[in-house]
Length: 459
Image (cartoon, rainbow, N blue to C red; front, side):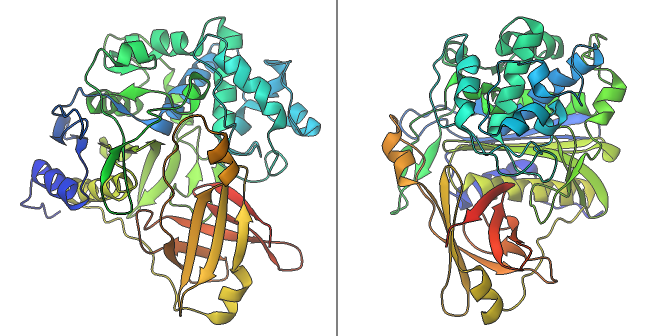
């Protein structure tokens, strides 16, 4: 392995300037030691220096905590993975009655429930927030029959949070604190705003069309979304979390948080992913893939103007965490950091596949408009090239009582080799993200997937 002469601190500082990100925090676990590189400030309006204990919103990395709690309940015999969710939440109502009776706990954990992405609603900050969220799921669309495909669902994990409340008899947040935060010594990880605001924390930023950064408001979504993405945490705590998943299921004190066999089971594939930058398969919440022939597990997270990436390489006892506070460029920043760390500490090369040259006939098959419950997805051609644009629906923006993240400029993309209808984004903040098209029995393209989310063709 050829080590770079550039240190992690040098690379992180250079990359944060390249992407013009106010504040970043990176942690690496390698050779049984922690290495940190933090740079910049918490906010362009009220700047405070970032260190390894500064809190970032880690978004969907929270799902790995939720899943770990659920597996603890499985180990204790309180929940069965193959049982229908309705066994534990009998009051559950879904738009598709058959799905309501057949979606299993594991379907939620590996995103094979067929449930649409989520509910756009503020269900308050009270202890009934998750209960209210689940009530609103009665109007949620069913994208596919349960256990037939992977489709990333925030709602599914919020439903797991409610299941945890029903089984434990306490709030979701109390359970995470008592079963994970406290035994693992995650002293800089919180859900409640009152806990977060008394520590040093970052705010998100979004870049305007002229390149100017502004504070991202809304700062985060409401409590009903906590199981799917509500944790504010430090890079040091996230690296400690990664080390736990590299271990035997015990805290440093010796107390068992999760039996070792359950910890291992979370890393085993339960469903295959197709043409996804998230991975090749999904375990229990973890996305699984190979990097240069070596198995890795990971999860990303996004909030309004904040992004996180956590990658673990179990057989090398290695982990890297990258947190950033600007959208959309925090995504490629995190990716560059993770790839640099893999190459410079492990000698592993992580590269994007190359698209094929533009093909007019194939392009005409996919040009059109697609949508899901929240966004529209438009594909057109620009000269001899393909372009896609993903926008929040106007009615979603109009109904929001707080500012939502800005839309992104259109992305260039290209089709990948072979006959699997796969593509890769080749420019912009989402460069390297992959997806695929779905055809009906007549061979007509009827849907497109991006980042695990399905968009159905409307014309």
